[in-house]
Length: 284
Ligand code: SAM
Image (cartoon, rainbow, N blue to C red; front, side):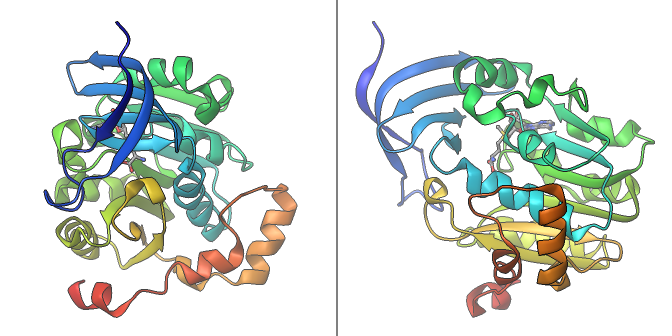
């Protein structure tokens, strides 16, 4: 009997005393893979949602915020990005946004093919036709192992992984970040989702380890309602560009040239997102 009309709660949000919950009309999919538990629910407030090991990954209602910020901000901060690597990103949202740019190739390394298959089938609205794009190359494998063996050089590496648990844990290690740096061209940029601003241990860890690997490391924020409990952080690292310093007129010209249409990202959001409240600056 299909499970219907129930509350879904994450096991814990920033701590075990706060739990994000969504009222669900119907469970659409559920599968335990060798890597993780995948669920897809149809929620009343946020449309279809992808949940991995109990944690909300993307919702139809607000995925555009996360996917636009993790894609367009670094791509527009780079002068001419052509070769892109995504690690994780199984729902296809980052791939969809990156392909709006005139890049030559996007390689996506996703450890669990079941995530791609389920999202393509049940929430195709997220990837749209990104997986069919001839510039996209999908590799099923561990992003950590891929980078260890990789000799290619990328202009941008996007780490769109789950939070540091299960198969994603090693994507938050110094060795991984060193391999990221080794796989970037001289003017390459890396970007990571680094968790909720109030989950300071995760933010500090990503920021500080990257400060030991890259000369330029910055944090920017976005408000993503389904990631509850306050602002969400992204950590961006580069060998020589300062993404927060990109001129807004320059950004506007690039957006015009590409004909980029967005619902959240714009040149002023780009600059404003790097303005950090004191409590974050203090703990970094
Ligand atoms: N936007 C979400 C967030 O911020 O939490 C992440 C979405 S995406 C669904 C996360 C993806 O990372 C999942 O599909 C998962 O299978 C993948 N993943 C986890 N560990 C990985 C690894 N070591 N290599 C490649 N992909 C990995």
